Length: 467
Image (cartoon, rainbow, N blue to C red; front, side, top):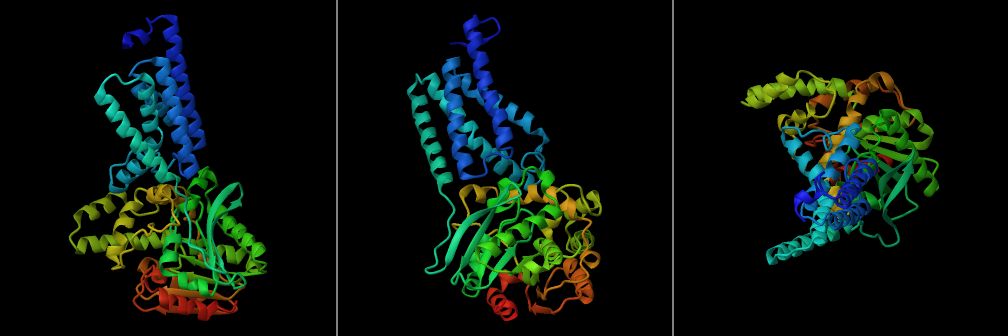
């Protein structure tokens, strides 16, 4: 069939087939936008997307009986998807941004989505149209093999190695209509329960906890939370209207109650890092009866005041070290706070270098992450940062948490970034608690718990090991 046979001048039957093909593709685009607005984020979503997209493509190919189905079906799907999910915000779905992280967002956002929907749709449409040339059949076979490999790769589930006689699992906790990922590991299920809340919005530390701090499992039942929007909880990000500091604290409290109930504890230990420590302190302050102790590391106090210091320090470093591109970027965007993620990209790219911090690669190679979670690591951080960080600007622990009703311990790196250490010192000096203790790890930076794991384990167990 030629293209002229499916134009408005075509016979009614051809018009009906064209209309049906367009409706099928548009309906799937609308459904996908409502179901997975950021694209397939879980293994089940990915496999269903491949299967449904292939079915839509095959059906459209049979209806149109033209190679144009290979192009028009994915096009209709894509346009419908983008129109319906226009209200969804975040770097992974916003218009492309001309920057390094913008390129990552484009490839791992729309690129991965296209691989799991547009590619099988076009391939199935090609099969339905039939291949009359040997070269086309060979190419289709190669593409089919590639799609099978993709499906097999995304089907591999996350896992964590077992502990004989202990507990070792990856699970989800249903919290306020969202499924939050949780890794629980410990050699003695009767040991003290420790909940770890990770730092950066959208970040995940299950890999780092296994790689560096598995020694904690001999002393505690360690539960590592993926906060809403990060790691195994990336799919819980939407609707972003619910991603607020108040909801984040409520998530921590709900997971705390799950652990208390499951392991029959009146109280557990709360350990929190960086941005997670800002929320962890609020949780401990609101409900001290749930916790036997609070431990902060890389402790945050006031993100807006911290970012003002970061801005000044990174700008001074850039001027001193001949980084005119960084200087121009900072001067062009002005002082924080900012309304979305993109101006913070400059901080993210240069703060470690400016403060002489140890490199902190994303530790996502472990089996605790699925292939999709690995691919979406940076998008999860950017999207969640975009939603949550602007809403955290009014938090100031110096004002909001002048006291804690439980023992408060802090394990800080001796080389902590000034943007955090200055404000922490102010807050810590005035903080009232039944027990208050600060331990400094010499040479440790913002991620001292992972940089000096043996010393951190020894310190933590000496502080709260018997609780």
